[in-house]
Length: 451
Image 1 (cartoon, rainbow, N blue to C red):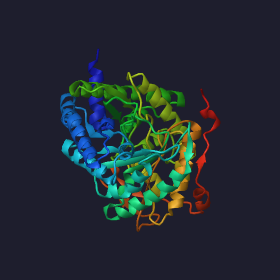
Image 2: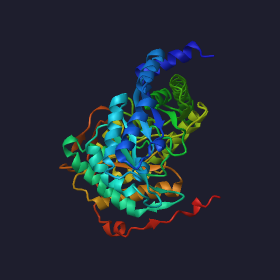
Image 3: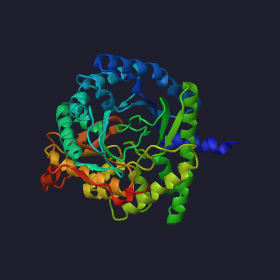
Image 4: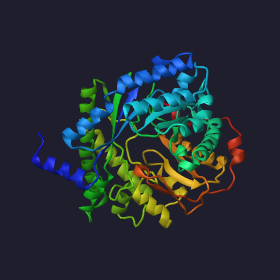
């Protein structure tokens, strides 16, 4: 039985503390669209997405009105397109354009899945798709791309690491007149998950149903507000209040996912209970950490505070939903988090400290802006380091880094909207090219032998 106090508390969270559902994402399998004729395959892709998701946006809007819950994004994820490109002769960019057409037709914010899984090597279609990413993202506005280059079970594909460093630089250059936004739509993963509802890394895994609804919740402002009421609490009490708050946030995600599933006649997949920030005042993960007692995010103690936050969010959220999945924890995107932006600008948060705290957060180096003349080999080195953290710790890590073409350290790259603005951060320029150029594969760690 829901009490009046529970209802009033939720209303306050929505109106004053930026509580929202960050996304409802429909996953769609395109395996039945494979065709040796690329034009026929693209037609099948467009037709299936339109058929499966024709009511996706409208359903989300109806749930918003019925319950008064803001649903910020309605999105689609699809089977990694490299699998379709493997048998189709022609440029994979045609698939990107079909996805863009479907995104426009359904009205979704973004569509993810211009992707390849190459953690153990390149199969047919993989390299061709990866090499087409800069062109594909420059010629589309709603299509997102991801590449999985490593896993705990397989190790790290260093040939793919080298290739992705150059692809990110090329994507930034190709979209230089559009704030280098092409690079902001690419995620390089280690241990990518099949049911992630968040962009730019979402794709529909081959182990998923034909169609599915996954929900991504948010609410950093709610957690911070709860902690602000306990200025003298000890660490154990802080963990407890975060767990209780995460439970309430996740229950709302469970409700939205269940309702969307029922209305669309599509199975409900998971709730991803990640705390996803925005540039809005009061909606910052960094501010949660500072509420715990840090002068600024990046100070010593930041890694410990983030580990506490991540663990408490998972413990509270997992009790509130029948199925928790995706990434689940706390995101730390520099350009999308007002507190992270401030910390980078004042010098308390550097790239090396960011890398350290990714060992305990949900993902990794997210929406990090670097100088436009950063060599591709340095970006590959950043990718390799993050992948190593994910591989050894059996967790998902990712890199979404944006070379700001024509800009230097200390300047700001403006994106607008949920993407905010990114301070151009200092990069260690000592050369790692010889290491990256060696290629091959970093072997899987001993902890991969779990059978």
